[in-house]
Amino acid sequence: AQKVTQAQTEISVVEKEDVTLDCVYETRDTTYYLFWYKQPPSGELVFLIRRNSFDEQNEISGRYSWNFQKSTSSFNFTITASQVVDSAVYFCALSGRGSGNTGKLIFGQGTTLQVKP
Amino acid sequence: NAGVTQTPKFRVLKTGQSMTLLCAQDMNHEYMYWYRQDPGMGLRLIHYSVGEGTTAKGEVPDGYNVSRLKKQNFLLGLESAAPSQTSVYFCASSPTYWTGKDNSPLHFGNGTRLTVT
Image 1 (cartoon, rainbow over the protein chains, first blue to last red):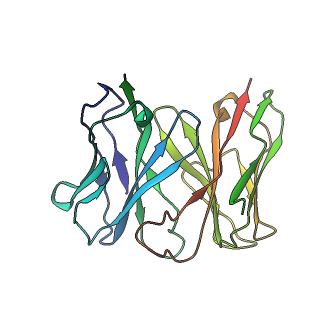
Image 2 (image 1 turned 135 degrees about the vertical axis):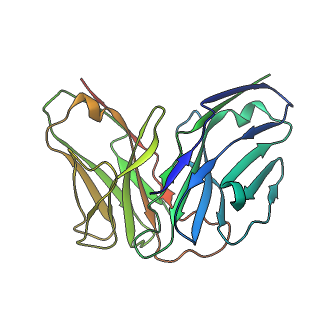
């Protein structure tokens, strides 16, 4: 069975602090995809990143970075120098490969990040 | 280009009432999905469709029915609403094949907030 665990329910930081959101996944697939989505207070879901299982290279995009480690089944997300606009719910998700599985994502419970000024 | 459009945005039902949520996409995507979002549980897949005229059950299908009579539309029906169906419902669509590392496979609508009293 596939499963995604985001153990941190809520995180509160002060602006400019760095923060890491943890994501641990379980899957028996040898090929799979991992995702992060952001849900700001307005409610829409915003795609942040997709990684495939055979690419463990870390990713950096501005203040955002992702650390993918197959050895620990983790795909953690770090925000450097957090800003108030980063306040949102963040979801980690997992998808297996194969016909019909394209969008059948397994989502974690979500982590609510509050960045205080 | 509207993407994925959900109708209505908000709805309040009484227990036992029925309703249909409409999802329309203009991207010619083959796959469409209905997810529900509940606090502390992330998003869970209700039903999905891999093409016009096809539907399949997801993780939490009980109490819902779906239809995909036209490729661009995916309807979610509640025949007899229950308070446990109070949730935010997201529709999404995806192409058969993903292209590019930065593309999200799922294009989400903005959600429908349903309250059942």
